[in-house]
Image (cartoon, rainbow, N blue to C red; front, side, top):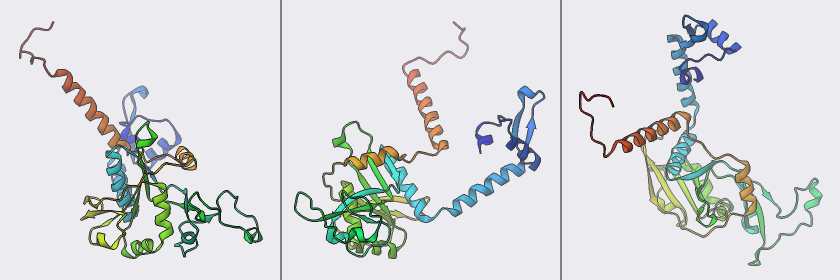
Length: 282
């Protein structure tokens, strides 16, 4: 793909030799300084086959997550995929049966080296007096606004579901939902249309559905999530700083830059009279 994007500019490395020997590229140019690599018909066919195989290997869950990510990024948000974050939940919820996707850790204490270390551990309490524990949560999508004011961050969690069994399993685990709601101002569930009715989900959860195919269908918000004020703790800030948000594919980024340049040129020409068909140069 690098040869395709660079218009065939050779790297002069052993990979070029392998590609030439396989017949996937050919050298074009009369002088070494002007040589470039051109994809042969066999090379183009190989690239197309590789891209199709990559698309088939992507699960519907990943495809739907990518579609929702694009919607959030178009809205000017920074998005992280499957970011592990610590969240505080009530001790009763943390002790409930879990789905195995997150672990419970004691607040303010290191992970014990021996099983006996936890024999006399007690649950810490928050300002409300309720005992709590810390839970490792990993939302499918965690996003914040692009802003310099922490009060306008508006952190949001989006959970992606493509099977009804997985969705119902999530809804049975209150600790998992509570951890998402502790980390974000809103929590949404995203799934194919017809997988579940909005009334089947708790009222505080937002509902997004995709109509039709996962790759080409239309995303629609059926119900907004209940908004709750949320201030990101320091450890969440550190997790965001160490992780990288999702970036747009290179092809789309280059296309957007090209469109922006085209718009600037058109704006610069507004208000100018068109030149005469045979005007003399100045």
